[in-house]
Amino acid sequence: MRLAWPDVARGAAMILVVLAHAIQLMGAYGWENGWLDTVNLYLTAVRMPLFFLISGIFAARAIRRSWRALFASRLALLIYMYLLWMIVRAVWFTFVPWPLNEEHPWLALAVAPIWPTNGLWFLYALIVYIVLAKLTAALRAWIPLAGGCAISLAAAYDVIPTGGNSVWTSIALYLFFFLLGARLPKVWSTLADRSNPAVAALALVVVPGCILVFSVLPDALEGVGRVVLSVVCVAAALAVASLVSRWRWIATPLRYVGERTIAIYVTHAMLLAALVPLVPPDVVPPAAAAVGFTAVGVLIPLLIRRAVGDRSGVFTLPRGLQRRLEASVTVAKTARRFR
Image 1 (cartoon, rainbow, N blue to C red):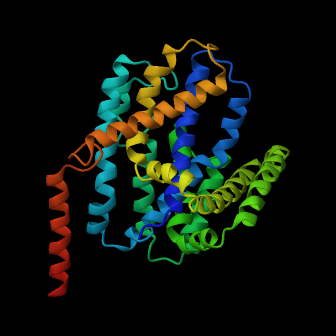
Image 2: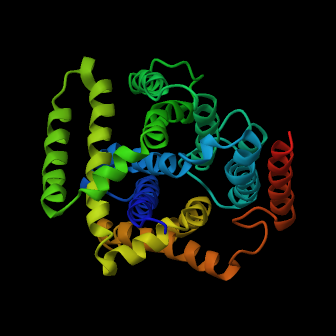
């Protein structure tokens, strides 16, 4: 039976990603966001680190499979979705402005395989992370974790040469969190299993304290502080998610979102880009607008996902390709048995 808390945590992280893009677009179109921008800034400590750590947990078993099985079960879908929705985005943003990025959509598409520049970078990062995790799967866990931590710290101090590509900086920054999930899944499961109201309450107290400490750190310690703060925030989020997963009335919608994040992830930015400029700034309070935009950015993709279902090739691999990949894995397993 699939555990509830990882999907609850991933659902919450997905909602925070949509909220972040809503607030950023509001600012680009002249909204006076005020404290919302500050909250959005601090949420970077938990939003993507949590998303990648949960992705690592879900990939923990997959990276132990053969390369063929790993490609069939994980990499093929990520590559397909990245390329397909890059094309869709290029067409969409030819007509709908995207003020958060200056790259021409068709140029972004042309260089997408080697130079990720837009909102689908999460899929690109997962491909890179899964390959790295597979390449280091035979090593003791501390080795890739130490390497990943060093890379993330270097990215936090902005000393990794990325040619000015902030996406590559983000990919380097969040590598450590994916590896934490992929190589230490039992640690996070134990934390979730032992969570209770007292632990969750302590987590909610510790996080603001850590943010306060981080805000007064000297420049020389900000990189270390950023990574440590995110680890603390992610641990706290999992403790809270585990508790929330036992409350069906909250857990059910979050889990529903968490199980369908890919549909929301690839479509929400396009929807928000079309919607936000239609609402004049300050017609409604910015906080209410941010909540409304976020709700639309989550609910409409879920409705699209529901309408499409498992139809081949939209949010899943084309059925024919999926069958061929599964057959190749079966043939390879059979061949190994007769060696």
